Length: 333
Image (cartoon, rainbow, N blue to C red; front, side):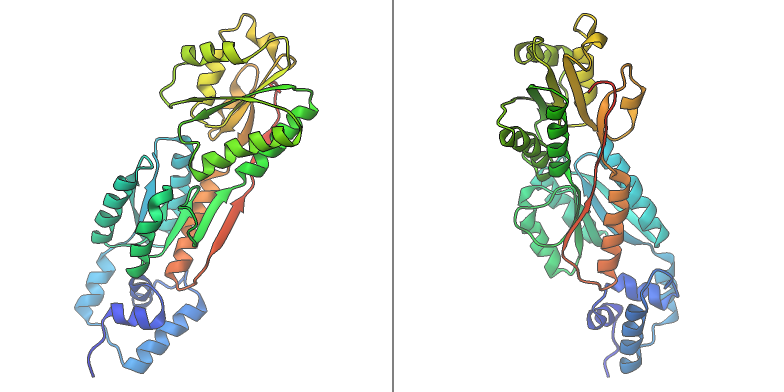
């Protein structure tokens, strides 16, 4: 009888070769009983006996996961990466990290490089076009989990926050507080899935209330002076106006822009309202304290890593895991 390889054992058991390697080396504390029994059954049926040299080599090597995010210097990505790395390390994995800037060609290059480096699975903050690459990973039996953004009309495991529902609830709450004019400041990534939900929730809440609002868009490199000039065109200080900032990177810029108004602190909350996304908690330290939408980015990263580890363990899943954002009403609303 032909001697089987670890790859063939993994294929017969319906798990990754890393899972088989962990089993053979006694690293089974994170492994389900069903998976252990399935691998052992294949070993018993085939009489598989790994060589001492091969086992020693496997014991010295590290299993790896590929993580491709927009930009790990951004608040959400940095927090999510922390959760991913801690969870992966606890299960014996190292991670390969790539910054794609949500560029399809960059994603493609990272996927090819990480596969060559032995990445067993992937966590992706993807572009809409990533579906083409997802199909090739499926053929290679490389499971993946989408985090925050995903391709259009692609099935799979997806970890996200309830941006649409949260923003809709926030705008509705501000209408109840008496705000009757609205300005949204958004970024140039508002066409991706997470950004789309943040802007769509704002627009739908106003439409359902029979109100209208304005929108302006800036890059991440926007200066507060430029934002202030735009706000002067859109904000009528005779009305109670809410300024909603859809991107966490732009919220401090908008706050600095508002500081250009004379006696700006007196404008809150009866003339101006300000609220936006905050990943690090800085908004509670300002004067006045800024109302904020808090996203549990680290917890999302932890869950994405756990989902991927379960896929590597042979548990086939599809569908969404949705985390709830928290609205912190403070002095600016």
